[in-house]
Image (cartoon, rainbow, N blue to C red; front, side, top):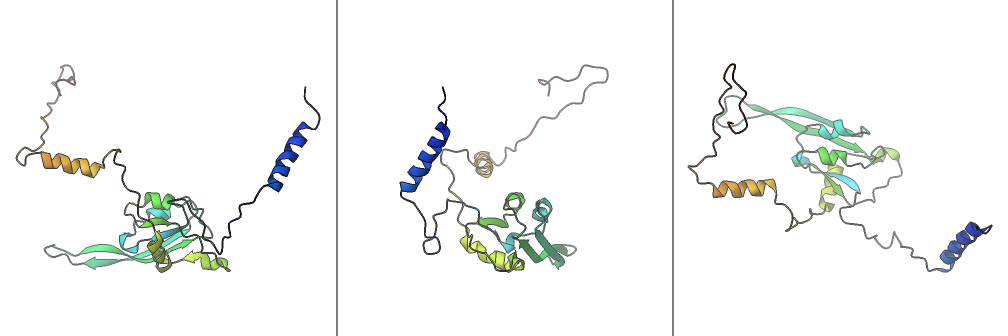
Length: 194
């Protein structure tokens, strides 16, 4: 049988326990908080890695990344004609629109974007939250190194490919047997025949 006011009494007991307990307030401006490793703060840009592929801007759900570039001709010795490459002119992120989902960092194939644990970049004017490539490049100094590879984990694909290549003699190239086309009117080849 339920006693009337039992829930109210339990709630007041929790309130009373919290009132008489010791509070644990961090003095934030004077004492820096201990952030968890690899925490998300601001997005940093390694400008030298950016190839202006525009994947980050296309995949951004908030459309807060603005990129502009131009093409330059590069003379390659021994090439018949000069090649072209994209040069980054503008890379801006509007942090007033960003929802910090990290999709831009995940889709970047050239590791040009990173999470920085810095979170103290508040501004008095909303328009100052538009950070250009120079401002984003300054955050790269605060990006922590990646965690070490787990010794008990699976080795990287590059390591296994290099080990396999080192153990294969140079003259013995990996060849696959030729596959014969099926005979007209005959049964289809079985997996043992392939």
